[in-house]
Image (cartoon, helix red, strand yellow):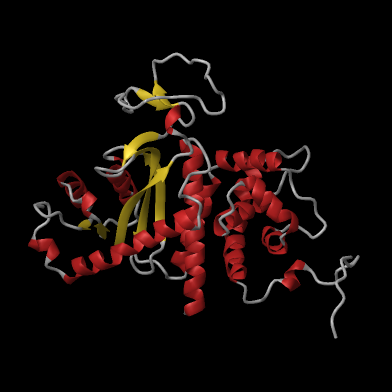
Length: 356
């Protein structure tokens, strides 16, 4: 018998969002780990808000919503709010009731900025790493370091001379700019859209772009991110950031894998001064590493495992929305990068738990 195409909805629903989400849905494990981290962050949230006045959006709701934006590749916060309006799964994960009103995008953005001021992304990321350590998922001895270029949310037309007076554009929406043949550098020019970004070329023959550098320190057992940061895109920024991340490790008696970009005398000597063993890939005519390091089986293992870090960058750019940054300014970009790293770890930990 053919069913009737009834367009009218039912007035009441007898199933809660909790009942509608399947018991084996991947987000259930991720939400459990997220809630565990948020419970420990509660004292920090308490210190960020006044004791009187109108209640704000709960910071736990904000962070869960931003996490969904990363996990489901939602392009903008306006689209995220739209999803929260009608997506039952999103409402369940964030903690918004079926009949609760969804926030306005501008209200959401203002409340998100308060989380930025409290460096909550760093605290949340570190708690996720602590959970992985408590589950014995992390290696304490073997790591890989690498960086990736993050294209800034700024166009080439915004890269202007620092000493050039501001002139009214001929077309406010898309001004005519001809910079071909003009020598441009970060010493003399700066983006008016995102002053913290830098004009950077990945390699010879590649296009120069306004960008940041995202640096990741990965442990080699399960490929989880143990530390991450964003730095200005400079020639030595990647290696300088790597040294900073390695220096923050609890133990320095570790091996550090890396690609040929880290095969420099200065970087290798700095690692040895820190007590770490460099397992970086050797350039063709390299003299920084010799047989005392490369003859050991551990060096070959580091070279094989270090390629996993490209999976981290691949996920963060294709799923996590980092192929083109959504925010401007070093603080917001670092916030977005850390949240994407935390989301990657949560997905990876959920997969490891499912296959254990």
